[in-house]
Length: 88
Image (cartoon, rainbow, N blue to C red; front, side):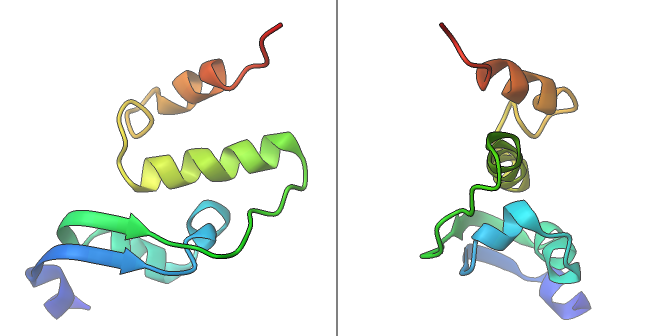
């Protein structure tokens, strides 16, 4: 894995992207530490809706993994929760 960390990738395509929001597998730690310009997540597997809270957590984890601001910032979870509150 140390060789992979020395390479600057133009694009990384990650299939089975639904695992990003649901998993803490060791290969996800490796992916987080790679150097890249573009990171794409693809998945043909629908997100399993256990309950709304779990589904939203999966979406948040994907946004955080992709380093989408403001969700990847230190207060990103609070921002996401505020945006995902039901509105009447």
